[in-house]
Length: 357
Image (cartoon, rainbow, N blue to C red; front, side, top):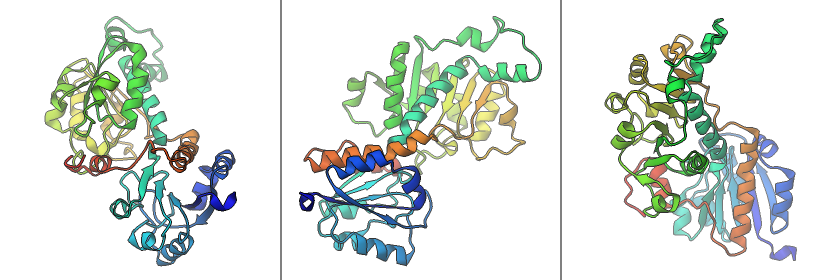
């Protein structure tokens, strides 16, 4: 029985082994596959390990496996590895590689090898925190907290932003980007009976109807939403996407939330817009990070700040591997994986024109 099981090679550093791979998930994996772990140290969280000795260890270990799962510490699964792995059918990325830096996907596809990733394991807490920042910002809760720590414990007045605009129910919410985080946030928003609009040039044509939202332009999102949530990945195409012109389109009494990446927004332009006092922002990310202690953004009363914590939870780390085991189980039972890396998904992540479907 054991001989007929697929062979899975997990390649990562010790940190990933200790913090991501739960014994219960390894037991689940062992129910349908044999597995080995290759310890490689090197590289960065978002890049591959290019040490020649590490590359050779990977090539040697992968010669007879059916699947390779890579994480932080792994060398790149490139044509050299693929050419020496005659049984290889699937390559999966756990986390930290949202731009396929550890997988040569084109070489995999040319050789009929399926590519998947479960980097969206952190999408759950990010979507939760996006909703939290929306609710906190609609009440401009940061201003109340500042008052209280400064000794002013008076209740809100009917002039406060939170009193006038504080309910989410029935509002229009505009999402900039609708990947895994956006789709989860849409699910979380449903009980609030909101009107959801989305700007995302990479959306599947059927998704708006399936999920019940309106696809529209970036200009319409910025100028016509009560709440704007930035969820787009940072790519060459999105860097600086929200500049002075775009920020000026945001009308008074709007809430702006960013849980994606700071450099998507022109920080100076956002600060100048916030200094007028007629919009409120909830920011988990900023440019630069960490925020310099003297930056004006810290002192603004209509801003709620957190230090890029949205996706950082213990549960999200173990979820990366748990979702991967689910993917491998599906694949080796003959089913299609749910989270395949495709030309469309890579075009999105790399900021390319969506010319490949």
